[in-house]
Image (cartoon, rainbow, N blue to C red; front, side, top):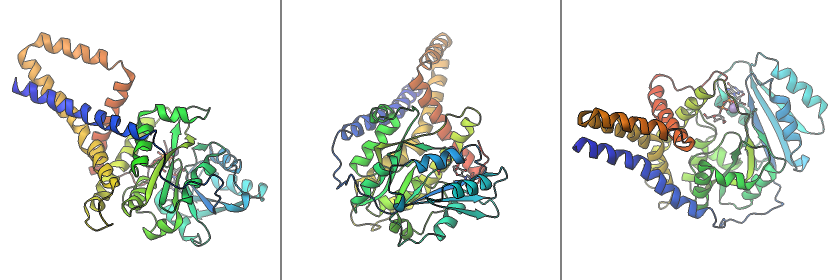
Amino acid sequence: MLLLIIGITVAALHFGVPLVYFLIVRKYLSLPWDLRIKEDYDPHVTVIIPTYNESKYIIEKLENLAKQKYPKDKLKIIVVDSASTDGTQDLVKEWIIKNNYLDATLLIESERRGMIHALNYALENIDFNKTDVIVFTDADSFWGENTLKETVKYFHDPRVGAVTASITTTYNESIEVTYRDYYNIIRIGESKMHSTPIHNGALVAFRSKLLERIGRLPNYTGNNDSTPASLIAFMGYRAIQIPEALVREPVKTRGEFFRKIRRAQHLILHFLYTKKYALAKGFYKGRSRFDTIWRIEFYLNVVNPWLLLLGSILFFYALSSISIILLTIILLLTVIALGNRTLRTWVTYQIILSYAQLRNLKTKELVWRKA
Ligand code: GDD
Ligand code: MN
């Protein structure tokens, strides 16, 4: 009986903590930004696209960038390719010649050493005094035509250090769509409170001076988004996700599961790596709200997933020693409940997060196979 009660308590914690957090954070969604946003702000922007075997998407991606409603003389595009074997480089070269009205460059690494290595190589080739904002974007992510403009307007406020877009799966862009999704609600809510520790590589923009100050991209966590953004937030700047910059990623079927695991691995590494900044006294003056947000997200991504496993084991084990019939009925009810998509998505993601932690012990996936 005691086991049963412990099991139920652990499971209740697992579901209860995120739910309460969600309800609190959601309240912040409707609050105004306490930021000095300027609608027609147009600083010098450098967009960097890392590519490894992206012949399928790279032209569509470059076309998508060329369509941005942003002054052409303020926009610089850099593709950094690491020894692709599928003709990506030739496609990019041709495109650059055809579109010579744009400031676009192809940088080449002779050997593949991972996305972070490639991006840092590109950063070495940038004059940090000539570009105000640096944007990283994946080759297979596509923006709305106002996305860049909507993103950079936040940098008008000197307190903003990093901005990331919201992911949408629908083609017709609307802010409404953003607000419907659980993860977007949390990310934007946290951003309104201060900053979110989780950013999206489909579009992540940095104040270039700050990227320089954190020593470019750290190589230990495999991601180019959440880690640098959090380092900047720990310095006291805002690192935010905004609702009006929308990006979509193609829905992939094959390899999608492994991609989710890899991303989860990077997210876990991110939280483990940034821990020292969260705990560091005097890294910035006083504790900011971001510190609290980071701690909660650490709990939700690193600790909380295990409670589901632990709670279920205790609960079902205790049930089985009380009554097999009861166990069968509850198991059946569980299966029926998993018919609910929200619950199923949640449970799957918790399993992915737990598994990602274990997998990190074996391989950190800093250079990965294409999905
Ligand atoms: N130059 C270069 N060299 N580019 C690379 C390499 C490399 O070794 N490996 C991957 N890339 C490029 C891809 O071509 C793509 O444009 C981008 O990096 C992202 O890689 P994907 O293979 O599409 O992986 P993803 O979409 O799952 O990656 C996401 O997760 C990461 C964190 O786990 C992205 O959003 C990343 O930006 C994010 O940091
Ligand atoms: Mn991708």
